[in-house]
Length: 541
Image (tube, rainbow, N blue to C red; front, side, top):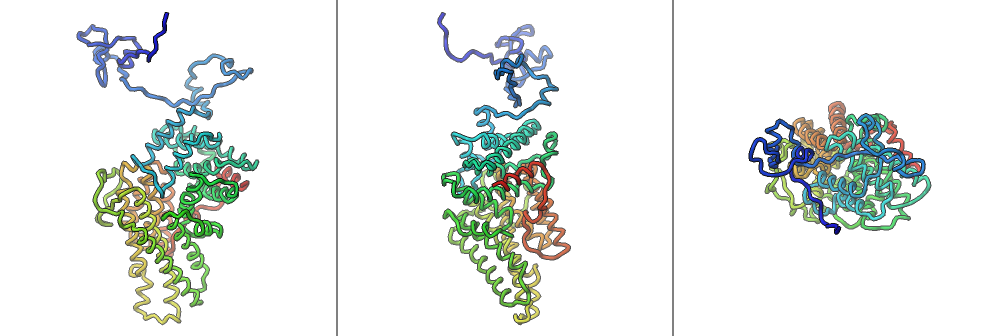
């Protein structure tokens, strides 16, 4: 008998009729025993009072581990069949899913996290790097586990699937152990750098919901502690393995734009170590964004001098003020040279509305639109720069004008020392308003989680300006945007809200202040088993 090829025939009836082996056809009478393919429920099921299961195929993510017998053969371990429900929930051991499933999870992450039809960006490297990591032909088990972990954590939160979130955490902890082992044995691979990048991106996705005992044992109670530890860890890894790393299309962007941005975000360009400052200012890949991050680094020595300066040393105060004004000019010259104003438009895009963003035209003016994704990021970080710099200019002017050698008239001195009348603070307020005018574009529904993710750093800089102005209405508006980010899956946004209110209370007690860095607020000693593993791996590097 000749075997015929082709795809086996499948019934197109509803799932209920398929199970009962009912044929498909026109249902002309009550007693006609056929499925008429009616949607959403077929008429046969409705007439007989039977629940119609419909026509959709529902996939279920199942965690399982094939137990091997004494001879190493999984089939010899006993009968293979469905796992009892009680045993199913108590034995969800992490296993490496098949390549096809991993690719599907990564595709779902890309579609759910990033804007629709997002082009390759020269500024935000996360989309480019993730696609590059997923496409590597020979990944280590460590990198493979980390890729699976970040997708499981995101999808688990998006679907409210606690089992998948727990599985992602198990993979995450396993990848940390792999990295610690490789570093302790001095086994180098570019995958160590790639995995450290993924660790940084996993932390903002951590879910504090009820996902079992793993959360209690490994969750960092200080919110941002593990994220900051991963940033420091990657800095150490990059420094330690720099001579052994070969520049390639993934390593280059990590060493330049990606990690430099994370360093600025975590520190607000305050308290940079000498090697961090040198890395930010002396190395560049020639892109406008890398140049901008180098200007951000100049804020660190300014704040350091401001904290240690002798107010009676008039020359030192003058030098500090001139340093501030030179940095301010560098921001402005950078903006003009790269013609960034050409990328702004007030014409609304086709999908301008967002379900979460409150209307703010009365507070900030007409919302802004942009020609492409890179223009958004460049403008947001450009406006964030003066917001972080202007408080330092205000304090430097205060030191110079208040010195007896300055001979400033009393009325001018009073105006210069009042934040509500000071020229720098008024300019900073305008920059903060420009950031907020961008929010409605960045938080459109089709910008998804990435739209909120890229606004956190500039929005925090703007909220600090409104804190110094004691403008509660604008400050509260910024906090609402951050809270919306938390509802979209950006878990660290909840902690940023706490930090923002913390700085607001400090302002009411102590008066105007300089910018606040995340690494300064998080206590040095952080509990949590996962954080301890991160620090162990960092110290071994």
